Image 1 (cartoon, rainbow, N blue to C red):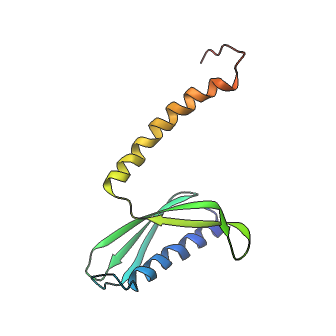
Image 2 (image 1 turned 180 degrees about the vertical axis):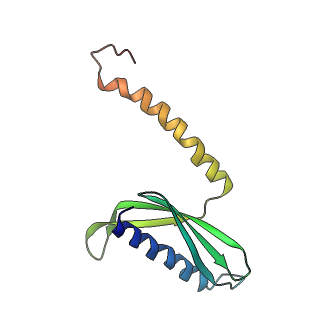
Length: 118
């Protein structure tokens, strides 16, 4: 992961901890501390948090490279996060299989006048 990307990721992950700590509607009132960032690829990572009660939480971070910044009036990279459910994680595991099939079906369309052997 490039240094600039890693810096943006750390800043985003620390902001999540700060935002969850000061939430007004957070019924337990626990503070969150960023424990670890585990990069997967140049544009995805997990951030692990420790809550006051001893439990941990994990967030999935994904980089969007063309986020529109209204104030600067330009595109910039931005890390988005979510706390996926078990069902969403199963969907993420299954999605590449479907994408592979779609790409396989689409490829021959690029060569309409040829009989492809693959």
